[in-house]
Image: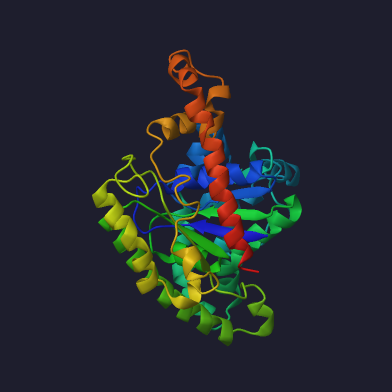
Length: 365
């Protein structure tokens, strides 16, 4: 099982749309995949499932998010078994360690998005788990058991779900923050992808990511060497490594530049590899050759804007290429079906992106 995070310190770069469609492409290529929504904004969850269904999940958990042990004591054993026999949010799964309570005896089932693809929904209360990480972070250096459990729990959950459901990939969605939760998630995944827009903000986002990674790696190296052999086993052996970048959702200007970008956008795009070279630590990218990481994942496969297609994909909770086959509303049907080929042609492009990413993941072995 490999864990992947998709991150940029700059918001609005299409991270959630990319994550959702990458997961569907991997699943269609035959790779069992799990999405875990760790972004407190829950955009990935809203992309993948109906809000009424999500509301039902959250309402059943409200008391547990307030006080897990107290809520559990108010239930009979059969009532609690019924609760965890249904899909639960990621915060519910993390809440026992946040409260210092006992772990769940069994894993609630993930939410099925498609064949080979499942989701652990997010929750707006994830900031509470981030607060717990921040409170206990210094105690990790001393090997304090609850602190170690807290910072290793997301990775432990990913491994447990992968073992139970035979997932090859667990993709963790994150917020654009460089806060404590993202420090933990990004540092402990196997590889990460940087989605970019061809603009100044993405260049500064890469600078910020690189500076943060340098600090985070020193912290994790220190923690790893201070802990006992048994506690080290709870952490990944390697610090996270770069899988590459992609230019995403850029407007197409045919025939202007090599990548069909406006000249100003192309000039910024050409600076992205330079920014990665300058600011991303060598130890994070030296498993890939310069010729690999300096080129966008999938080259131009998903580089150009899909216009309103992602909005329709979110509305019908399905990847762009499946929208024409969804149960369309009467007002949407004429426009969508009239552009069926445009929608369906995106499948091949996302598969090309996924295949290139898979080749880069192989370099982590």
